[in-house]
Image (cartoon, rainbow, N blue to C red; front, side, top):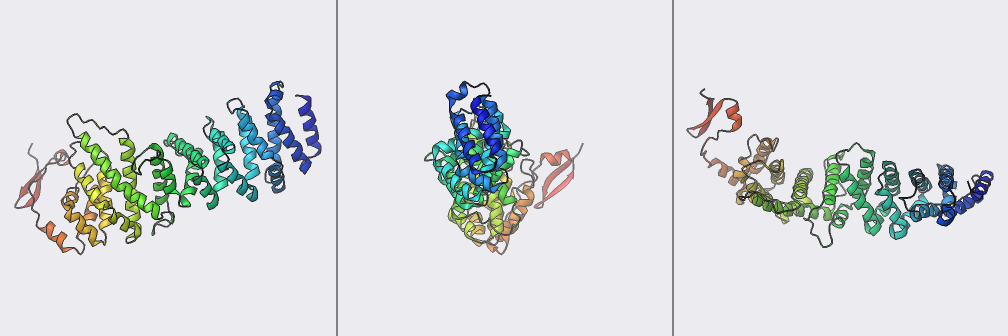
Length: 449
């Protein structure tokens, strides 16, 4: 250990927990940034780790020392260490200790947190270190950094606004979304939960629309899908379905979110139709590069909008979907799905029928729109068992009920329908039954061996 560090540590031992201690500690940490001196000291990293441990312990749960550490620029000195000495060359213990110390200084210090968060979001040099920390291949470092971010924005609408309004904040969000994509098969991971919580705080402050737009390429339309946007939709879907109060639309679904989700159902339905049409050609080649993202996003927004429309019954969200003719788009998609000889896009038909039924509930406009677009026969055709669309028959029956409720035109249309033939399904064959049409009615009999 160098004589300089020995002297510093001796002085710290005499002045623990006062202003001079923090001033001395700041001096020591600033000296640690000077690469040339440290390069000559074989024990530099060990000394630096001792200093960081001392700083971390001094400010732990002690408000006065947190204030002194912030006012004395200890916080900035630690940031300099992490930034100026490349993270790749710092030992993991030092990086971990540095992040924990910053967290201890800021987390419980309301005044410091309010000021420093703004500086982190709008000063590029101070924000870039957090981006580097989040991309490190070390779960402890990533976890500590996420804890710091979460504690900084939790129940703080103003700081959430800063995060979505700054380039640095959006860059951090993008990295977190990438991390969630990487961890999607391990949702029990603590880092997954932390990332989800950070995004949840931002969504709670009605920033889903802002985040969704920002995660697209420059000039990209809302319907242009990528992995980050899909993860955002997954987080929103999870939040909506986990709401304790399920009688109303969540408060964070504002006008921008209503317009966005309604438009996504329409636009993604058109893209799915394009993909299905390509798949049904002779070569079966789908030219769409991001077909998986489109399918996943479409399935998510169909589930989301069905849930929200069911909760709201009559209100602005439904009116938005009526205005954008979402019903017409999903009817065309269901019609296109019926042309596929082999099952594809699992759950899609089920979720379409569910949304159609929800939109038709107590809404004469939607009931009529389905009839005019030729959607009633399509729904009737779903009253069957379909392994690729579990419970589609039950959703179809409910949709028919909503279509016929107090609508004589729809009732008359169905009453005029006549059976054409009895379809012998694979399930009937496996059960040893044969279907036949007799006097306008379908009858089943045991198959002859």
